[in-house]
Length: 364
Image 1 (cartoon, rainbow, N blue to C red):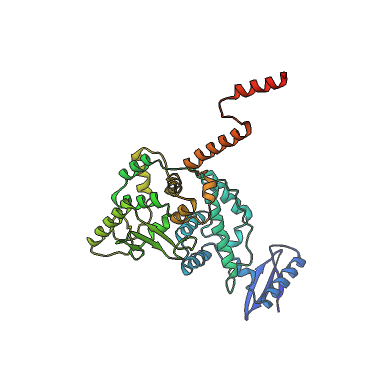
Image 2: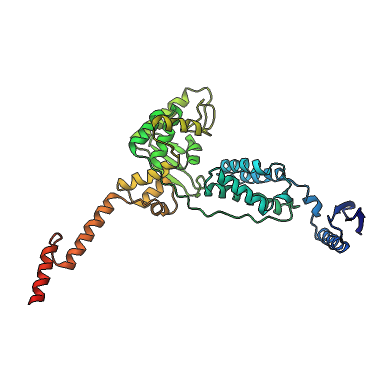
């Protein structure tokens, strides 16, 4: 049985859960408010919920491990991105009580990130992580929190338009450290996602026949993929294989880090330095993905085949970046000319004569 009492002018309530007493301030001076709060807490206890006073003690850091564990348990391919989002979120909410993370608090976080020049799409990925953190905590048994704050999402118009001309790529590759040259060559030609190339293992490579295979479930869209290596890429993989044999420890990955003792991870510093040395301006690794699609289309490869190589699930990439082959554009021009010829009954370039004929017809 709960009770109501006062400390100074403020009303407090006392209730029991599993024989343990809980005391909670109403932060108010009205007895009616205290009665309502006590009734609410006793109702929560009857429903098997943890009293709100426990929720009040939970801080943001208590929720993070559950979020990251969910990524690891389910082997989600975007774990690295999730960890990056958590690092940014912790800068704002580190040690903060969850009950203090409200919509105004979240809005201040959004404003701060935008003032730092971060793109809307990037902020949205962080907000999505925050929402997932709260939702997972609320679904725990017993729950760690009793409510999820409203988390707004930003409008995205973040279509990147960067492409590599072949001369730019050659300049960049020449400036890259050796351990990244083959890695970037494969990305430039296939358009694979960076995570897919980092995780590529020798068990997925048929070096003798020049084939690389990703089985269903090993890609972001969970669809299998097969790529046939051209002469240059075969040389890249052959070199990687020979370098591997020279190491004391045989690693499973095709592309390894700069010291050849582990999986390739963060190479942003080496990338930025190479871009500067090559004098090609700031570039994104993801530009390779767009460029590969464009190069394949320009080479006359059908869209559906290009998508099978790069791993695009829909053809939206072609619309988003206006990727059309020169052959298609040339054919469109020819077809338009042919159509207009059928409408005028003459060849193009005789507009003057057509007008003269019209004048003769009127005079007649």
